[in-house]
Amino acid sequence: MAAEMAEQPGVLAGVLRRAETDAEAIRAVLPGSLAGTMFLARGSSDNAAVFGRYLAELRSGRPAGLMAPSLYTRYHAAVDWSGFLVVALSQSGATPEIVRTCADLRAAGATVIGLTNLPGSPLAEVVDRELLAKAGPERAVPATKTVTAQLALLVTVTSALAAARPQAGPAAGEAGELAALPDAVAAVLHDPSPARQLAARWQGLDRLVVAGRGLAYAAALETALKIKETTGILAEGISTADLLHGPIAAVYAGAPVLLIEGGGPADTDLADLRTLLAARGAEQAGLPLPPGLPETAQVITAVVRGQQLARELALARGANPDAPAHLSKVTATT
Picture 1 (cartoon, helix red, strand yellow):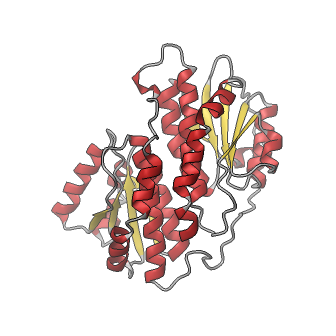
Picture 2 (picture 1 turned 135 degrees about the vertical axis):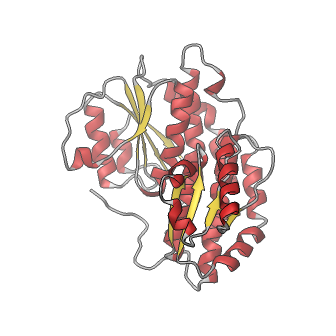
């Protein structure tokens, strides 16, 4: 896991080098009149899809959402997908329900783009375009470099949507927004001490809340998943807004909160939550990130901090972060 985390600056630099070519390939297959964008994924890829869903709606000016594969594999829904773009994310490109659902959606009129790691996967056979992370083989069970590569690819996808939008406004994204990302991730990886210190403080936990809002909600979900996978701690990723609607009772009962800052407009809500938790004496913490990053780059960098914390917590608890008990690299859901 540590070795694969260390490869992330190079993998991300590769995604950025290919971004213009990838964006052109996406624009070539977009529906003439985009009805909306939907994201199809499981596991860590589903957390990346949350990031994409926010960006797609902001940048395309059309609705965006997350799909439920069981509607097609179990309920056999008959839906007209004409005019829709579907973005399917699968690190392996081999999850049966993702592959089958893509085939069904494409047959029902959708344009389907597949985001995966390496060429030659079953997913490639059922999509209109395939974008590759090219992160190399990932052997540790917890996905790291493939997740951050997917997040960067989603910036490419949604930037292409923005460019295709008539009279694109300021929400369409900015050129070079991820230019500083490889160096920012390298800086985080070279300084594991904040994560190590927090892991020493929290190594005895049995539950944890990880909170963020807006784009940072995706980082909160992914950090919580990595902690669950590597340690067995019951960690819940949640929006700061949803946390206030009842689940905060678990915090008042003793569950610590890890706050994820995204560097965007939703951080105002995070500041309000921090003040509320302090007033109630609830335990909270955050992890530092390099300053001055655009929101998309900061969220991806926050995911890397979350990976660090998950690994350090596992080591502090005497667990093996590379191969958590009872888990496998590919989960063959159907």
